[in-house]
Length: 239
Length: 267
Image (cartoon, rainbow over all chains, first blue to last red):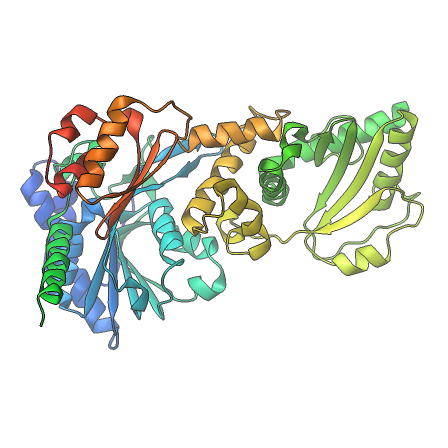
């Protein structure tokens, strides 16, 4: 196993390495696992602010399982002029040899102004086959035309960035930049990245298996729905 | 076919078979062709084959009623017909295939599919080759890139009644790719492949049932927008939306809920 660390310096080394280890060590429970993602999200957020000076109106995109911890960490740190788009996806294997699978979107939440974003930040717990990130980008390219697309994950599989670049025409992939703390190059016999984030993320986050996790309604989505409903009510009652 | 010709096509077939799994260009072309005819009435009559044995043009074969369309598919930057009497050239293979089809009394057409030098190949096509055409088809490393091309997207749109959603189009293309690459459905009609596609998308035709109608009423009373297509329910509420298979739902449990966000958790 050879893990390459990236974007680590004296200011974040201790916390990032500690949180990455928390993800893979089995002695931690759901709360610690969630906190590790939240803290890694904050560190990714700090990195984003440092690297990108002029983000403009930002759209943070994530899967539902990443909303309340990883994405929240980024949002809390960045305090940007931000919209969110959250997606619940399924996974279907179409063919085993060669391995062909899809990640269809089964549910989504999108703020009303996602089309006006200048920067899109796609957040994922781990980028392994890039299947989910590809799906989310395919969906969003229908609605958005950001100047920059930042793809951020605490852990990536080696070469996943290059694979993602080949999936899109140059006018889209030319906007990509990738941010990660750890690049792994091994998979176990089930194809799960090793050490990665310690295996399948859903049960470790307390969300059940790959099907049950789609029942989870993030607090982030609830708060945005309530904010939008409140804003609607205010407009209704304006003289 | 002579002994010599048989040996030639067997060698060709062996080489093609070994290369086939890694040959994205041929595979992507096959996916494009299948998608093109999926929503047409010809779908019931079109069958597709790859790595055709005992054919000089063996990359891809379409049989349509009593007609066969043989394809040679080439992804080469530098390509030319070559001389008809020189073994191994494209012109040689086309001439031999034409002769074989005539000797078998087959209704046929021959097609050269190319990623490069299309105009040159059209201009220099040997005049002796009857029923032959050249088609241009681009090569990309990834099937996903094709859905961003207008001509490719336009072939898939009719399958969804015009839903112009890159994500759904990508899913459709990937499913057809998976069905084709599995090798299990070679020789099926395009209409049968379409039914398999819908099954993979989770779409099946079901009769309206009382509990599904109750569910729809319940959702509409909570200000959900609903569109139903067979077993699939497309719903939206405020800025949330989704698609769900009604046959997988615990409808009785949902009917007891009155908070939209709780309902959405169960959809």
